[in-house]
Length: 495
Image (cartoon, rainbow, N blue to C red):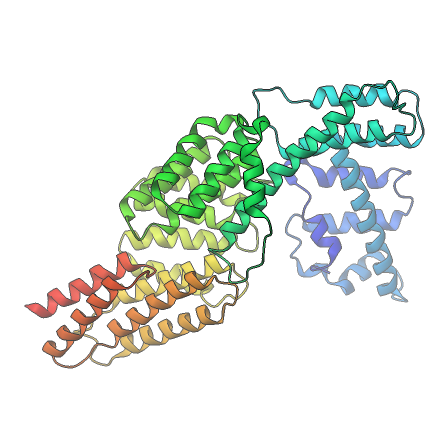
């Protein structure tokens, strides 16, 4: 039962808000439930909150606890669990209404409209006025959608007399629909352009140029902070120029307080993607840029959404923090945000960032000890998995001493691990072609370095050839790490 939909739903109840206790109280109310066995089931299950991983959550064990007779116990348990899940769903809806005043008022208005209540129009106008944004503040697009729906519903209501009525209601419906549509369409165009760099699949997005021209030509949006910054973001994604990145970053830092939080998080993600993509060109500059972005995001509370942080942002923040030798800030960051990682990847992601710190400290055995338990895990995100596998490869390489590897044990292990990682990359169909190619370039050059053999003179000649090929390759993941390793091997053979 540990993997049942009921248990998965119970896991979403937040301990910090005492939601399980609130649900139990709701369940005991006669209007919500009159079946005492359902209450007993919850009382048993809550003993194993919040993880619900106990072996005592097996169906047979629960049946034995709840029922005196084993007759049809499984069927009875299934019915109770279904009833409990449905009641929990109802509770979540009710609880959401207590947390979301706008949603509550919108539903009440819908009820008044459906009942032809004489106060519907007055209440609707009050809510429209309350939601109407101040001119100087940028508004989340979902609020524009709400304003469109409210104005449209009021204008189209059967009780609204069109002749002699205030047509501004109709005009506002059109205005807010345009604002919602333009902002959301621009986000889709931006997301589409971003996806081309990270996904293997693609699709056609029609009339992009016409839509962008329409947005840019609309005088109503020329001072809208959200549209302005999203247009700058699109320019950066399309051009991939440092100047456009710096222009977007400057505007983002200046106007972040004007942006809805969700939109600010999208822009932050795009800026992070840019610095990460260009690390190979100027590692020191872009690692510093990354650290500055994450420090800014931490200060403005932009990294957590619905009590969750993306594992890739968590890991990238730790990586640039340790790289810039900002160890105190980085350890504080890692500790602060660890509880917000998804439970299924929390341990692996945390191990990865701590292993990177050990790698920076040249504690390569520590890296291997931390990451080996996760190296063969199949259910990790591709970003986390590739970082774990490449960091393990690098740690093994750092421990390898070709001059003393007389039995070729480490050489064979490195070759085997590199080929295994290569197969993983080739078999990952969702990786964008450019990312896949960059990783495969890395494994190709690494394998050549590992397999260099012969006399010192022969090995030196081969390494010089590999060095030149690596230098002139268009894009290679971890080039900045591999180049110094080859140079050191060349230097050792030159004496």
